[in-house]
Length: 608
Ligand code: F6R
Image (cartoon, rainbow, N blue to C red):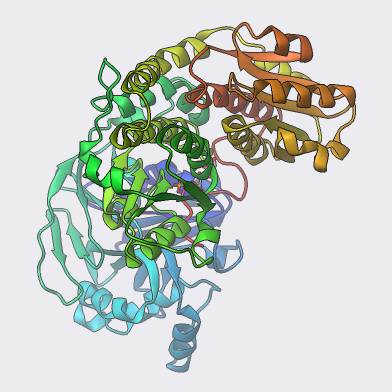
């Protein structure tokens, strides 16, 4: 989950690396560091806190160094203190390493290295790597990195520089991201493309086990045995604007407003004007879809909520049983697999350790695996039999917004195609739904543009101690997502409950102080939800409803209503979640919190 940057070129590296770290800060922000290859040797600066602390520690002074490494950390092994920040140095102080990932056998390696006379100064797993590299330093940096790799267990990407070879940076990856940027007389390593997007759009996506030496003149790639391998250069379609705030105060607000475009892009070429769905790109033909007897959906966090939302639609429309689980539970509960069970791993980053592990487990047991992913070339897309991309573009805000609604849209396409292939719904009805889905981006655009009470509601309830969210069916899944958004960026405790279950316990929480957010879409269970809202009102709690335009019943029962345009109830979650994103956003900003980088969180969770 950390962010790595490496630079070698003809320009001073310091501002380039620091700027790259800024763009990767979403990956981790508890400490950071920088190594530059100065004339006198390696100069390393590390600081605890977000990047501002590093910027203050390095100061404004210019450095002529044209080679260096940077790192922004999300602590896993070792507390947040300066000794545990990267880069780490070897005993001689001539080699420096930054790492993203986990070295699982670091305790044994640490003991062995200490016994051999190495002096380790941090509590991290990463530090063992630089000492292993040091043991082969005489063979050259690339050879030393290759010698270290087989001794490491776990998943990682790391980069190394050496004062003895001041014109190069070496990097490698195993099941953790590392990409190369190809510039004009300069080369970059980074955990993610935005780090160098202002310098180049030419990218080399590395494979597991690649060991790459970057010089200003280009890249040389070998496998772990030292045999040369060729890696293609591709051009990414994003430009720098994608990684900037484009006039918004925060990435989160920008990304909330980008949802119509993300949806349009995700549906493009897959949903015809007539409402027909084409997912041939996934390689899952109708024959395969007809054969399926069950679907498992595995994911974490917001991606799990997208899966839960659409699990209702898949069962209702395609009549295939769906089981859904959070990946960290699924992987250890010994699920029963078979070749007619499709396992869908949903992960916007394609890097989430638990989701990847669950997908691997399923594949090894013979079930076909579909990855629903937002990042091309990510680990999930390499490890799946089939891939369906959301095309939400880069998401930098730690709280997922546009990738979530794009996931729901992509999964709805799958639900429609499955239903079509299995012949379980009238074709006209599926076309009608497809047609409706095509109209959702425009409805969302209209929703985002209309005046809304959301800021006023946020101001009224910003100091509440607790929020309860209630819904039924897909609306309940939307509540889980809305409650997660509020708790993760405003730090207000929330609970999301299936409305019918409320009287079995959580109703005890209600009093006149408690705002209750109700997601009231137009599903067939709406009348049941109305009874639950009455129960809430009877306890004096304020009801804030999200409801479809013109729903008079809800207007009468609620203190406030956040209106959304009308659509088919299977598609409504794409609209009803948006006022909840905005409610969380406004409460958190009124409280003065950094919504793009909530405390303790990281955008990609590459540890279990
Ligand atoms: C919450 C959020 C997280 C992620 C989760 C899975 O706003 O973003 O809950 O959804 O960490 O991440 P991916 O989708 O990258 O696997």
